[in-house]
Length: 129
Image (tube, rainbow, N blue to C red; front, side, top):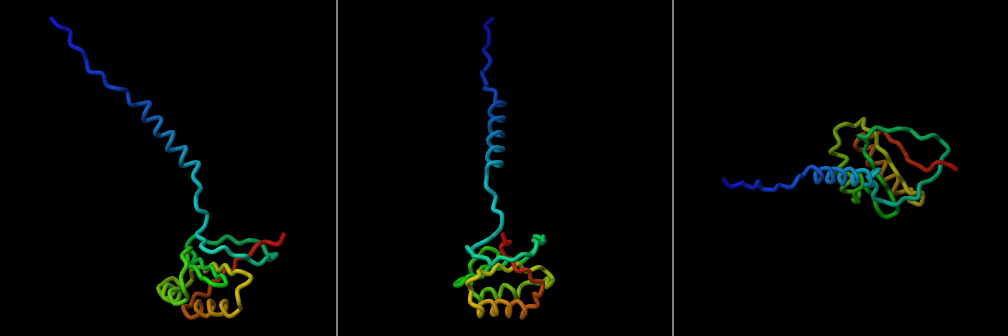
């Protein structure tokens, strides 16, 4: 009678443990995107306290040359079209305007918002030191 050898199979339990540890490590060490901001703005300072706003807001950034909607650089014509698509007119509109922007551009932006009935505005600024 001959002894039969069993096939050796590696134990994969430690391998699975290491894969899960690596997964947890990369999830914890990943830098998550805080907000969708496309433009580097120099915001004016104000003394008022910060307000908490819902996550369903419409985020608009305005610099001297560019306008951005939800972190995507666009032009005013595209902004007009996208604002026309908004169904919920009560949604908060978060507006970040660089302090060096010409007043005409600010008025043009506010005219677009008024045209589409988006009146729930919040202007973002830097807190005074």
